[in-house]
Amino acid sequence: MTLLIVIAFIGLITGSFVILKLTPFELIEDIMKPFQKRKIPIAKQIEAVKNPKSAKGIRRTVNEAKDVLRLMGKEEKFVAICMLSFFLMVGGLFAAVIMENILMIPVATLGMALVPFWYLIFTSHSYKKQMDAELETALSIITTSYLRNESIITAVQENISYLNPPISNVFQAFLTQSKMINVNVKQALSDMKLKLNHYVFHEWVDAMIACQEDKTLKTTIPPIISKLSDMRIVTAELDYLMYEPLKEFITMALLLVANIPLIYFLNKEWYKVLTDTVFGKGILAICAASILISFAAVIRLTKPIDYKR
Image 1 (cartoon, rainbow, N blue to C red):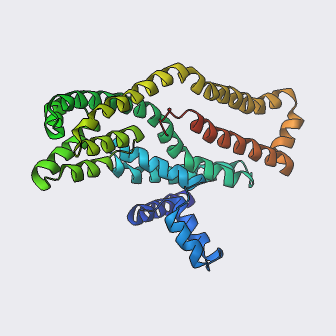
Image 2: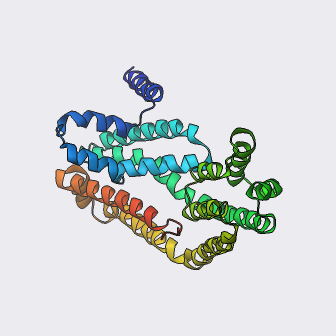
Image 3: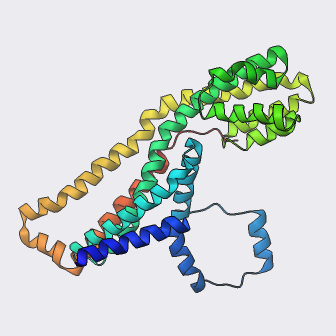
């Protein structure tokens, strides 16, 4: 009966998060707001609006996961990711309670809740590489056509059938806007720039906007595309080095976890100290926290190379 009540309670909480479109982390932040300082000087508020600070910690991880889903065109799956995060958080809570380790509760709940977001960010690296390759192909063939006919609309229309999503969706929206909504090509290019968060693509669009006023500037476009080729070559050369930290992390994490059953077979009294005393439970919590923090750092290190000035 108790188990059924717990399952019903979990279902109630999960349904509330889905209906309100909240994540567990946003709820925690809302709860903590009353305990924070309310009075902020107007000067600091203006400065915060002019120069917003980049998100850090958990908020940064969640925002990156949202950006990944937006890039893949699967924004509607964010609710499912949040539900999975909540279930894993509850699972981590139960695991810590079963272990009778109170110190492990914050580590297990927070770590398990972040696992879906970390996994999504990690698997997006290969997707970004594919997107860079597709973007390089798209910009190359469109630029070649533009250098020949000096019409960006004609260049895109000639090559739209050779492009693949999500790049093709961006240029298809440009054609639709420039032909049926607004004949202002510069405005259509500016709107297209906002649909893809990529530095080289933004630079290419800016150069193309400049070419609408001065056709002689079209010679500045091919060097911009060559940056994508340079990124692909450098990424291929550094691919092994980028994934070396991941291999080292997996090795060290396995060794750390394997030491626990090894202690049981070597000396059962040490194992009891590790699992039954407050000091031992604290060590286990610190070890779990170090694994989670290291995993988050490894994901940052294995990110694909981006061109930024």
